[in-house]
Amino acid sequence: MSLLSSHTVFLLLLLLLLLHISLFKSKSTSPPLPPLLTPPTTQLFRGNRATKVSATAYDAFASPNLPPLATITATGVHVRWDLINRLDPSRTFHPPLTLDLHTAHVAFVRIFPGITPSLIRTILAESTHTRGLVLESFGAGNIPNTPGAHGDAGLVDVLAEAVQRGVVVVNITQCLNGNVSPLYAPAVKLAEAGVLLGYDMTGEAALTKLSYLLATKGASPREVKRLMAVSLRGELTAGKEVWFGKGHPPSGVGARSRL
Image (cartoon, rainbow, N blue to C red; front, side, top):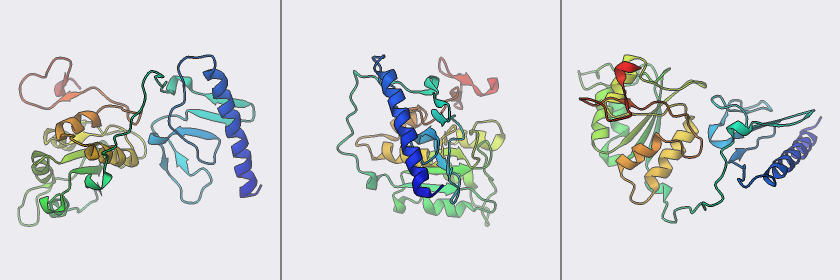
């Protein structure tokens, strides 16, 4: 089957899926259409949960932390309605007209063995006007914290200094599947330093979301941090909020020792 004919078959199957959804929609007052990624395969993923996993394969996209919203097979269309975020017809989306992504100044760093605190310090220097950092860490959210070559501050200290200046730092995992959590001491140290848990967001979703929030007019670091931990469009699976401050946690927040 040629590539052209494969695309033709996919489009016909996609048309069948849309027809299936429209029939469902006609019986419901709640429109079920969420944001979808429609690569040339027989699966439809939530766009902010998808990532590209192959440069050459036909099935180049995957959604590691959320099952496909719909699958097209020879026997029909199978929609996971339990995963669909129903749209509220009474609410209208109004994109902010003052949004300027050129002012976001968000960096993306993948942690690697041998990374030095001075490298991160350079990226987060005030002269770079960096306002946000997505940190792609090992496993469940861990990074090495060895001091610099001359006994300088370690990575966690450098990140803590940036957080104190108002830089929003988000910790996500390098792993294709899973999420970051304060499971091991290095991840706990990061959270205590003010680094946010990115849960199971993909790198693409975390970078886009942080850039968007920082580019919103009047957004304070505190408000951006709050919204980064909330699922706005199904981009993350939020876990129980963990208290890393001193004293007793606020009502409804679990203590770290209870994890």
